[in-house]
Amino acid sequence: MLKIAASMPQQYRDASAEDLAARIAAAKEQLGERLLILGHHYQMDEVMDFADARGDSFGLSRIAADRRDADLIVFCGVHFMAESADILTGPEQQVVLPDLSAGCSMADMADIDQVEAAWADLATVVDIERVMPITYMNSTAAIKAFVGRHGGAVCTSSNARAVLSWALGAEDGTSRADRVFFLPDQHLGRNTALAMGYPIDELMLWDPAQRLGGLETGAIERSRVLLWKGHCSVHGRFTLDQVERFRAEHPDGKVVVHPECTQDVVDAADAWGSTDFIIKWIEAAPEGTVVTIGTEVHLVKRLADEHPEMTITCLDDEVCPCVTMARIDAPHLAWVLEEAVAGRVRNQITVDPETSRWALVALERMLEIT
Ligand code: 13P
Ligand code: SF4
Image 1: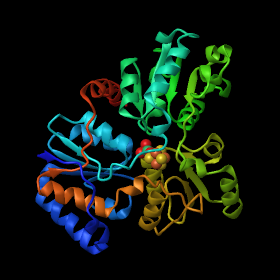
Image 2 (image 1 turned 60 degrees about the horizontal axis):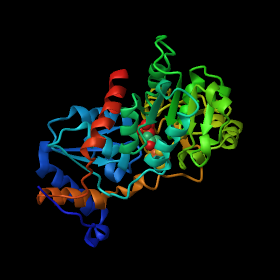
Image 3 (image 1 turned 180 degrees about the vertical axis):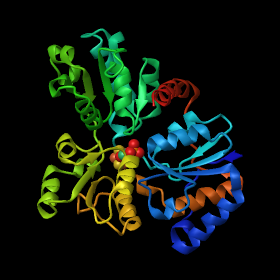
Image 4 (image 1 turned 180 degrees about the horizontal axis):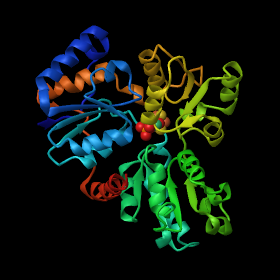
């Protein structure tokens, strides 16, 4: 297929919702089995309605790795997810992100030059061979490759505990490292390590803007997990105050949150876990449950629509969408599909072979561990 970089024509923005839905369905029909549309749980319904598979970032990466028969994968999610899909799929498979501006502000908080500099800094204090880099899926392919090259693994919010255990030998006693360098989400790293029983004074925040991460050498030597100073601006909006107000209004109500929320919010919740965990929690809850959810609002709204037998609200009543996830909309989906029907692959995501090789090592380690 011919690859051409182009922007979406205005006619897609002007089309009605009904027209777009009909055109997406028709293009899907024409592309048949060779097309696979993957939808992350945060996607809008106008897109999700056409996903062949829905999932969290872990589930979607597994599907991308397994579906060798699909030669065109349209990833409805954000850039790092499409990159991971490209890395996990074969060279003959093409991965498309309907809008290239669908990034992730958290992934952008760790760039490879900063990480290389931090690693060199760290090596002046501790035996770097005994430091294991672990990166959250929400990171660039270059960071994943760095981690792969240095013996580490990727994790997602579904398996962060298993991956940290693998690194630190918490559960099988086989310690692969003295400490973990956890990128780029401090909250997922902290919440997971605390749940595993590591004391807070062994979890150190590494500020990439400062020499030695802003830490004393003694603090680095004492650390078990060094947490990169990154966060999600969407989940950062949830507060302990919101949890307390909900509890005051609904003494029997439940609070379920994503581990990208801050520690005080996670500690105050009844349950926490990945987007897939949250969905399963709701599916298992009894009729009449009153629950507030601390995660991206499109998922919360979908759950509320699908479960009228419960009262489901978003913990932040001001509503907090992930604006970059929402850049994948029906016009962009219709455009890339109709272009594919015409033999033109738009917005293909390709990771260079060297980066891909090492990032694959880190991703495959994760898939083996979990
Ligand atoms: P999941 O790992 O639950 O899919 O979450 C990804 C994400 O970007 C959450 O903000
Ligand atoms: Fe990134 Fe946060 Fe959006 Fe998830 S919700 S994709 S972490 S910005």
